[in-house]
Length: 316
Image 1 (tube, rainbow, N blue to C red):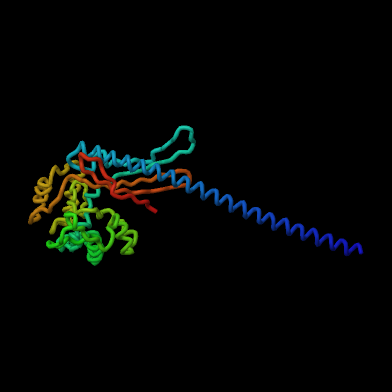
Image 2: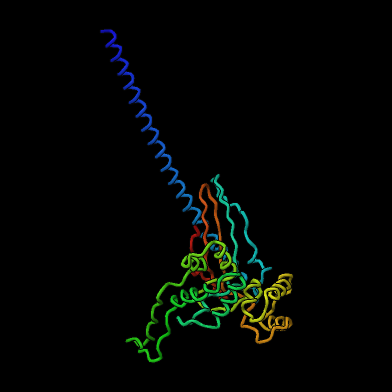
């Protein structure tokens, strides 16, 4: 009898231990889930606040671009707009938490504008040849050219026929819609073409997508872009030109560029270029607690009006 009671007590103890273990496991799991949920909420709040700070960073870029447009008649790489902001601490009174902001402004007109490849949805063969030369200089397959031309052409609304009837209110007829939206930057084109990161980086450094056709700013263009603009100009000659430029011998105007180009011995007319810019890309990153948020914005400058933000996008 005593042995049976001992066995029953032992079984009861074991059952109790099992129940305690299960309860402890459930409690730990619930606690971990609660902790993870709380952390997700805190992280999302930090990301929201980081985005607000980045909006202030975009305002900083617009002020820099506005000041540049009012002060300068040319756009060069030695001016204030080109100075990056590195690891700047952002502190708020009464808050021990510190955010760190880094940002920079790039001249998008120093790159080849892919929007030049088509006009009203019609491909432009001369511009396609420029793109092919640029791809060859970058040691990329020029077969990419026709695919990029198709993307750009589809993103442009066709021109109205000359005999298009006016709207009933007497206003001009509405412009037809494009077949696809205009990509926001080269990264979206690279994504559409499923390009590898090294190819994306090469395109990002030398090409852009702007809402309108533009001339290249030869004061900020890399050597590969200048070589692509001028048939017969080698990459070594282009690097010699940009090297002299970056040592402080900037171009004052398009005629100055044409004169220096003639000094290289290249025959033929100089391409249509500019030495000032109206399009800039602002990039910024904010690190706040466990959140890190990066954003880009395309800014258009048309003095004396304040710069416009054409689009913004968060970078994953």
